[in-house]
Image (tube, rainbow, N blue to C red; front, side, top):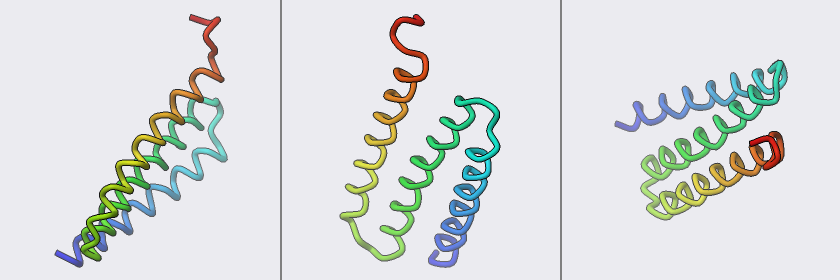
Length: 87
């Protein structure tokens, strides 16, 4: 089980690296926002994987906080990029 979780952590880090490339090369701000949302998802997943690897239940609580922050960040970006007047 440990090897599987470590492999999953490596795959998640590769996904985060690909997201960094999308942020650098993304032609639109929406592409960049989706890539930054990927960071939030990867951050939550990595925190859960590390919690399972090291048997630290407090990391689950930390992952919940990361998920809430990622969703608030996405809403703030949409409000700023497209504004309330565009609806």
